[in-house]
Length: 250
Image 1 (cartoon, helix red, strand yellow):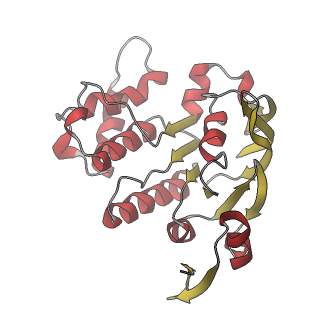
Image 2: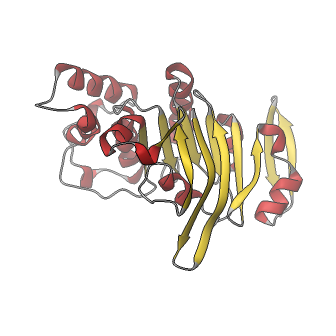
């Protein structure tokens, strides 16, 4: 379980987060939603200490992440950025790097086995010897997800994980993430713009507006009124095959 309490963050004099609070349970997928500039990416980087909030706290199973060592935090929280810097390493070496918080004297058999399992899970077997600079944006995103999963985190933070993927791979990746959350009890937080993908794969929804939590809850809060207030557009909510579908008015 992860709990965010009144987190604030500023870039100079510009306040981005102004007291964001919410709580997510183990096994839940939470969609983080809002306009560009609402503070979504800033929020997730405050949740793993890439950025340090000016006030407020983030608790993981009741423990403040500010009191965790870097190694302890890396074993608990994994993060996949929207944009990733490419190195000259191979896909396999990049995935293995996710085991760094656990490696002491050398790479263990368990480390290698976990890498092989995750690589197979994401269907990356045929590219393990390719270098990262040879990959497409979508392929690189999958590799970064694999590196995060071998950390065996309690919390997985994903910043627009489907932005470089075609529709088929979007569904495959989010289905996999949803399965990981439910089967392994991982709390997943996903910064996402596509409301329909969020409705399909997320259990809860955090709408940010003007630096605060505008609404937080299950799919019942995704309403035409909420969408208009947060995004400034009118929308209809339809039911198709027992799924809620958002249709933006043109």
